[in-house]
Image 1 (tube, rainbow, N blue to C red):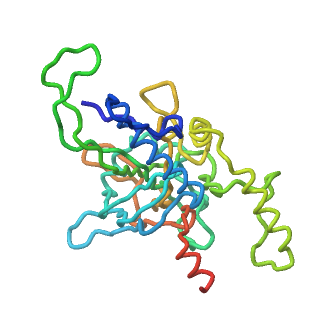
Image 2: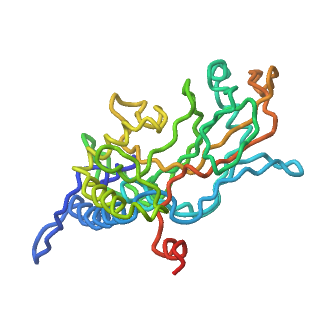
Image 3: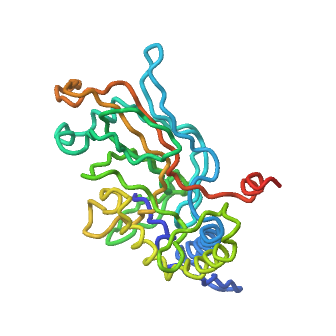
Length: 316
């Protein structure tokens, strides 16, 4: 029993199933029915609200207390991914920092992963982590369908089994990854989710009242250039975004790109390193000694602003 591929990753079909008395239906018709409604909703959400955090999903560091494990915790919340799918984390999710750190091969830390220039690619409003040496890792979130239960079914493919089963339900779930940045340069930051105005000129300062006409023109041009040709073109554009680590843009099991590269950045984390010292893991391997500092930067994460948030911001 394998997990079916999310139909929303395929070409978007605006065709609805037509029902009539006496029409024979099969599984493909019911999948098409669900995909139509899911696809139209996702398309509307993506164009109207963009993508990013909608509510919650706070990432914070939990130091060890009274013998408890040191953890990086993601609070419950909900987000929109670049395809317009809702991604919900219903309860807190944790990663144990020590296990994650020791899960990387010791050779990884021999290159430029340990940064010594203090430039970690964090947001200017976050503050200075004041770390002379450290490693950078980003926390990402992605939509994931999870099979629930089993139900008898006819065997699929060249099989004649009489005990074949299929998932009884598919739950809208999520996947979290904490990914080490291994670039030789300053870790990149995500670009604005909205396309820049024609010509790639960044938006002017919205607080400048003397440039109202130009700001209106920029917004208009951006709206006119924000159309996505099709689903495959949209996915290919995501795969070409060098902000995503290469391991998240490519599928290690195929020669093609990852079939679902629609990741959402939640936070950038800097782990402090002590110069010239190492620590030994339980398996006998050694890595640079951590100094106990874990700095979480949430400034670069994208947000999908609701009408209520915008109203509060504008003072309504």
